[in-house]
Structure formats: structure tokens, C-alpha cells
Amino acid sequence: PLNFAKPQAPATATVLGRTKLIADDAPGDIEHVIMKLPEGFHYVEGQSLSVIPPGTDAKSGRNHKPRLYSIASTRYGDTLDGTTISLCVRRAEFIDPVTGEKDPEKQGVCSNFLCNVNPGDTVSVAGPVGKTMLLPEDPTKDVIMVATGTGIAPFRGFMHRLFMENTLARHMFGGSAWLVLGVPVSGGLLYKEEFDCMLRNASPNQLRIDYAISREMTNTIDGGKLYVQHVIAQNGKELFNRLDNGAHIYFCGLKGMLPGILESLEGVAKEQGVDWTAKLSELKKNNQWHVEVY
Image 1 (cartoon, rainbow, N blue to C red):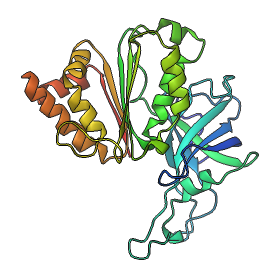
Image 2 (cartoon, rainbow, N blue to C red; image 1 turned 90 degrees about the vertical axis):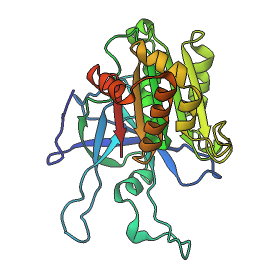
Image 3 (spheres, rainbow, N blue to C red; image 1 turned 180 degrees about the vertical axis):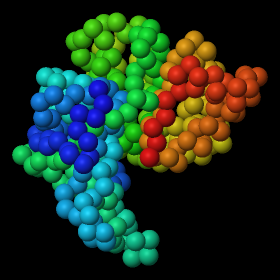
Image 4 (cartoon, rainbow, N blue to C red; image 1 turned 60 degrees about the vertical axis):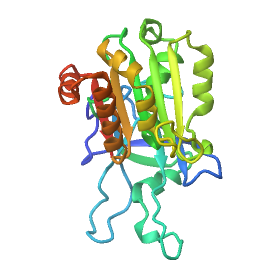
């Protein structure tokens, strides 16, 4: 499904609930927001939703521009009835490096709006959009997911679909899923209880989760902080074996995650005697390579 509503003529969603996702000692604020959608508004895992914050831009006087958020639920929503959608939102705040104070002039308009909503509030939404982050059509293929922070959103949708919901998609999934999630501190591990539950319930070898908690773990490569690219480098051989067998690999999170990851993959390729440039273009051609960074 694409563009049930356009940003010029948005639909109205109603907030059902909002929950803080991270511990108080974790940096920042990340909220899980559940909204009821208007009838007929459907989406699938891996798509994104546009949110148009209320009010007008102080400088231009025009309506605020829509902001895109990766959808964090399956097509059935957290309510499992196909009428809701969930988002995972980080509050964008600017802290003045000199004073250490928050600068209200530089707050993210949309993220602060969403992180403050209450049940019953209405939200202008458009979409859904996106075709790059969809699950493989072939249910026997492995799914490798690499996320930093709120980049976990689409993968929460994937994992609920593959391991939690009682649907054909779950019963037909014959591949295995591997999640690598990077966060700064363990109190910032998003959806950990849900993922622990999936690990307990999944068939042996069907689900693997690696956490890269940068301020608490060290990598075996140079003894520095552990980031997602180090997990990739440390498991390079297995990763390439899976890709050779048709696995799909997905990346979601901040733009800054990609250079380190690409460097790691190039290093692994070199060790394996593989031409990385050729390998990458082959993965893209076969639709095994999926990237959504912001």
C-alpha cells in the first residue's frame, strides 16, 4: 500500500498511548507512540509514515514540513486488529555545548510534538511510503538487521511478524533472523523485553541478537568501544556465508553509521578474498541490500 493520504490532504490519527522506552539514566528521551488510523489506512512492515506537526513555521509562516518516521509495528499494529500504527521517536533536543542548557529554538518540532502527545490527541499523518525496506518475498531467506537507536523501528515490525504473531508469515518463515543493535548504554536497549521473549520462543538457531553497547563494551579489534561495525567485522565470515546463500541485509539508523559499516564489510571482503565493489553491486542487483538512514 502507498499514499492512502498525501501531505497536502493528510488523514487524522488518534493517539491511544505513549510509553517511555528507555531508562532514566540513558541519554535523551525515546517514546513509543500508538495511534489509531482512519479506516482504510493500511501499511506493511518496513514502510514509513509522514507526520505533519501542528502550527506554522516561525520563519516562513507556512505549515510545518512533514517528517518521516519508520513504522515500528506490523500491519496488524500492536492491537493486532489492523487499525493502529506504532512509532519509535527520539526527542530531538539541542544542548548548547558552552552552557549545557537546552536551546528551545533548536528543538525538533515534530519529535517534541510526538514525545508529548497524550491519549485522545489527534495527529495529522500521510503515507504510507517506502518500498526499499520490505521483508524478502521468499520466506526461506535469512534476514540480517543492523540498527542504531531508533533505527530499530522497522526491525521491531519484522520480528513481531516473524516471531510473535500467529499468522501464515510466521509459520512459513524458514530462514533465520539476526539482529545487531547499537546503543550507548544498556538502559537504552529498545524493546529488550519483547526481544528476550522472542529469543525464548523461537526455534533453535532461528533468531540471533547481538547488542553493541558502546559505552559499556569493548571490541576485540582495537580494544576500543564496541559499535555495530565491530560486530560485523567480528562475525565477517558468517555474514558473508549468509549473504552468499541469499540473505537480505537491512540497515536503519543515523547516516553516520554507514561509513564505518561499509569499511568493516570491505575489510571482511578483503580477508575472504572477495572483490567488495563487485559483491556490493551484486547484492544491490539481487535486491538483497536495503538501506534507510536519516
